[in-house]
Image (tube, rainbow, N blue to C red; front, side, top):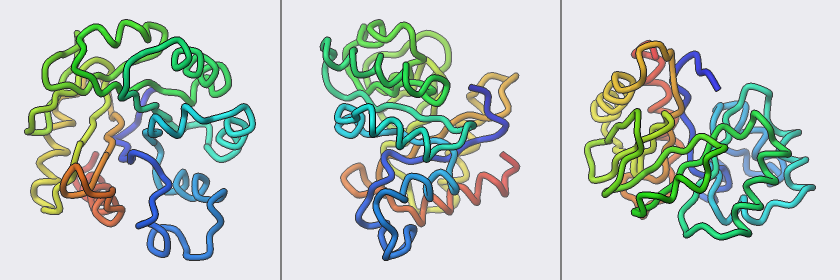
Length: 208
């Protein structure tokens, strides 16, 4: 999928801390994905969520997301046949909406199991061939272009530097790329949607 600019997204869209702030207090849970997709154009789906998806769930996802949306699946545990079957089923149902997999692993060959789908590896020890970028921490993103932030600083200057660093890393012929926030100020904190909104605004002000 080609991106016209940087696309900020998050790990998951169902966060209790977003209720009453990002989501209206009385908004039904079934409407949250539609609401999210009106504000952001990419999403990293947590592994437990997509592993539980049924055909009916995928039909709902298709109804909720616009055509130009990039959906990524988080992969954090070891590969097995049931997981591969589920990924294959999701790919068959979602087609081009499924933009890729984001694999968190310290096993160097894990990405080889997903040859038919673009893979971004997030790892301390291994890198895939091609593109790579690090958010000034021990983790390196490599493979298919997708920036992944394990945590998001609340400092606006640091946020701006992260965006500039990431955008300078992508191929010169690319106008943009997905940029996923996985947690708050620390990896143990929930995604702070206010800071994600700030990050999105900063990216727009920087012309990305």
